[in-house]
Image (cartoon, rainbow, N blue to C red; front, side, top):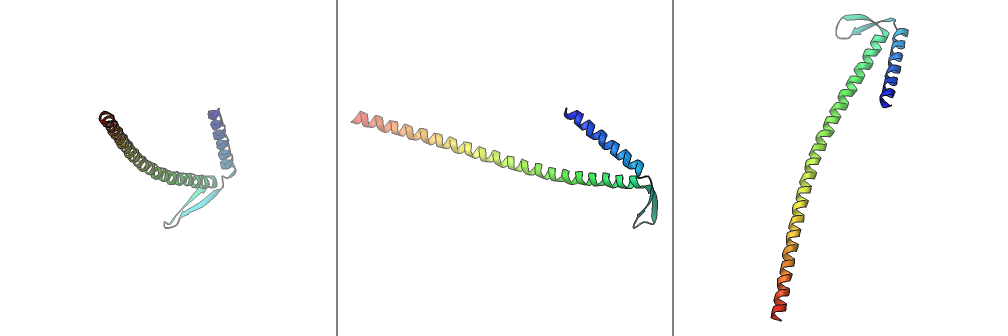
Length: 116
């Protein structure tokens, strides 16, 4: 179902681009400022190239942000693992201390009943 929706959206977009290209075939002078070059290109070509460059620039910016967030996530995961390790050690220490206290109470109880 989702694949069909993607195909329909893609085909609709393609039809819109083709109709746009057919309707905007007039030549436009494009000059590259520091260079003394002027090129005649169809209007749809200029606009579509601008659109593609904008999409690519947005994709690069998004990719950099995703990379930054992934690195942050890895650092935080390492911190969490460290905290979990510390908590596990603390729990083991508490358990050992409780066992030692229980043994001491048992000894005291045994001594008090044996001596008493």
